[in-house]
Structure formats: structure tokens, C-alpha cells
Image 1 (tube, rainbow, N blue to C red):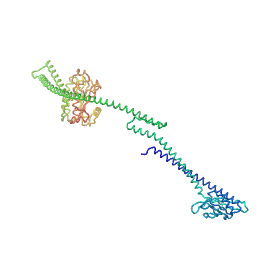
Image 2: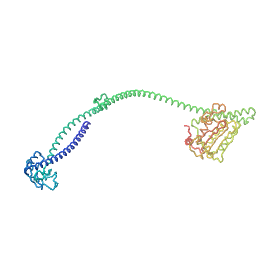
Image 3: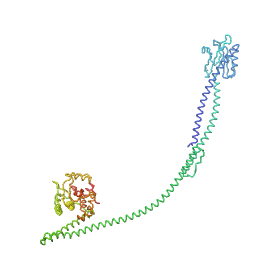
Image 4: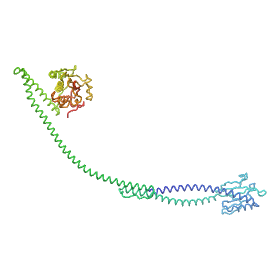
Length: 553
């Protein structure tokens, strides 16, 4: 790779050579023009002088000899001739090849042409000889100093004289140019060293710094921008050393922190593993506890229901008078025993159903059935509950209801839970059961889309609702009404009784059918529980998943 120093030297040398060449051509042209003018001026002067000499001579021969002597010192003059008024040559001399004067006109020149100068004025013209040489001819009229003496004097001048002068000037110019160019090249070489020396030093130092050796410094003392650049390089190296030192220190600290972090991660991993083992043990214990709880509830419910059914059965037999008629105080006591037994049996069944649902064991068995028949069976119990509370019970049933495919026992259980719940919280007014196809109830379908935005076809569903004129539910409690063991506040169980599982079980049974349940209520005016169920129940879990109802895992 060519160094910058020699590139700089070469470019400057070429520039100087170009400038000198241009100046040489300019000087050559000026000298050529100057010599040309000098030649013409001298020719005219010599011609005029020759004419004066010829005019003063006593005879043409003497005149031409005098003229030859007059121009002998001028090497450019190669011939002189005198012509009379008619243009006839009266005398002539010329120089031969050795520089000697010979009589007569030069045989190389054409004859004198008088017609070329009819006005008898001084003139000049250029003649080209056969060999390619050129001769300037200068004519001048003779002054009329002698009586009858009139004619022309002609002087022949050759341009090679000017060429010799020009060649001399060129040789001198070339010598001067060579000397100047030599000094210029030495100056350029010195200047290139001056310019490229600091650059070479900077490049060498940068190469060392690139290898990681940042200890050296750039020593440039030129007192100009190169020195400023060297100082900037030194500052940069100092900053790099400082930065690398800080990075190495940070790397060392990072390695220490990494080691500490690895130890902490190991400790945390070990602790998480221990916690995971403890969690697995706790989960196993919870599963065991849940299994034991389910087994306990199942066994206890069986053990409780067996004697309880016996108590209820014997109470019914006594009321039927199988051992004789009973009346008065005894009959009231037996009826109380029968009612309390049924209530206790209902509580035990609710707890057992909830336990079954929590264990994920609750299933439905769809079959074709008439909803009106289910409603009639529920009405027997509902009217009894309403009569005890001295409230009205009525049913609003749509016309021409088709058969549906549902679990008859579970739908009856849902309806009984909703009706008993409505009667329990209603002290005056009425309880109304609504049954109809969903496609006939656009307002209910709109409510369903608000609570459950999953798209459905209303023609595939029926509606079941229970309304009461009871105490109502505050808006802040509506979101918790379907949570287990929840009855508005702590005073409700003491006032109205119950476990708070009825609505929870009802919701689970409705969702197992692939339906939805929600509540609307106004405090002090009453509550309505809405149920929308499919007319043809299929796989309960699949239907619930289609409609966005969460299933119990």
C-alpha cells in the first residue's frame, strides 16, 4: 500500500510540473511573438538604411557594395538587390552557404515583381522556397537624391535567425525550470515529511492502542493542529484507561454478586422445593380430609336419615290413628314432631346434595317429561307453605307447552328450593311461579343477554321463574346471593332459619342442565329468581361450556 507521504509528494510534484509546463508554453509563445516583431522591425529598418546608402552611392555597383557592407554585421540578412523604376535589377549580392557575399541575386529567389508594389511604397512579403524554407523580402523606394535616380532597394531576411534566438531562450528557460523544479520538489518532500510525520506517529500509536497497549503517549510538538490532534489522542487514551478500569472493577463486583446470587438462588430453590413438598403433603391431607368429610357426611346422613325416617313414619302412623284416634294436645305434639322431622330431613338432604356437588359427583339424567306435571307436584307443598305464612300462591303457565328433556327430580328440587325460599322471606302478599317458552318472553331474553352475553336461540329454551313480595335484596348483596351459607347478613338465619345452601344447590343443578339462573330484586318490594333451561338437555358440561357457564373441576 502506497503511503500518504509519497501520494502527497507525487500530487504536489505533478501540480508543480503542470504549472511550469503551462508557464513554459506561455513564455515560448510570448518570445516567439516578440522575436517575430523584432525580425520584421529590423527588416524594415535595414531596408530603409540600404535604400539611403544606395541613393548616396555614385553608381549602382558602388551602391550595392556599400549596402552589403552596411548589413554585413546582421546575420539575418542574406541578400540585397537594387531595382530601377522599371523593376529591372541593376545590382545584387547574396550570401552563400558559407556566409560569404556573392554577386547577383540568389538563384533560389523568384524574380522581382514590380506589379506587387505599384504605389512605390515600402512593403514586405514572405516567400516560400522550394526546399520549404521561408525568406522575408523587405522593399523600400530609393529617395530621389540623384537626378533621375529612382527605384527600390530590396533586403532578404531569413527567419531561422529568430529560431536560433528562440532556441537559446528555450534552453535558458528549461535550465531555469529544472533548477526551480528541483528546489520545489525538495521543498515538497520536506513539507510532506512535515505533514505526514505526525500522521504516521498517530497511526502507529492508534495501532498499539488497538492491541490493548494504552500506556504510551503521542509526542507531537509542531505548535499547530497536529499537536492539538495528538493531545486529543492522549486524552482519549486516558479516558479509555479510566473507563476500562471502571469496567474491570464493575465486572469484578458483578462476578461477586453473581456468586452471591447463585448461592441465594440455590437456597431459594431448596426452600421452594421444601415448600413444594410441604404443599403436596398439605394437598394430600386436604384431599384425605375432603374424602373423609364426604365419607363422614355420607355415612352420617345415612345414619341420621334411617332413624329420622322411622320417627317421621311413626308420627304419620299415629296421626293416621293406627293405634286409635288422637286429638287435642297429643295431636298437636305429634304434628310438631312430624314437621320438625321433615325439616331436619330437608336440611340433611341439602347438606348431602352440596357435598355431592362439591365432590363433583352430582349428575343429571334427562328424560322426556311435562313441566306442568312437575309444577303440580310442587304446588302441593307450595300451597301448604303459603298457607302457614298466610300468603297467596299462584301459577302463571303458558299455553300449549311441549314436552321437554330434563332431569325431572332435579328440576323439581330446584323449583321446591326456589318456592320454599320465596315463602320463607315473604310475610305478606303472594308467591308466583312463572312457566313459559323463552321465545314468548322477549323481555326475559333481553335480561339474559345482559347477564350472560353468549348468543342463543330462544326457541330452544324455556323459562322458569319464582316471584315474591317479600323483604327484597339490597343491590350490594345481589352478587353474593348464590354463594354458599350466604343469607344477606348474620341475622337472617336466626330470623328465618335455613342453611343458606338452597340457592347454591339450585344454581349448580341449573348449570348442570346447561342453563342460567339470576336474580332481580327491589328492597321492600320483592324478589324474582329467573331460570332459563334448554328444552333438550344434552351433555351438561358441554352445554355449560358452550354458553360460558363455569363448570366445577
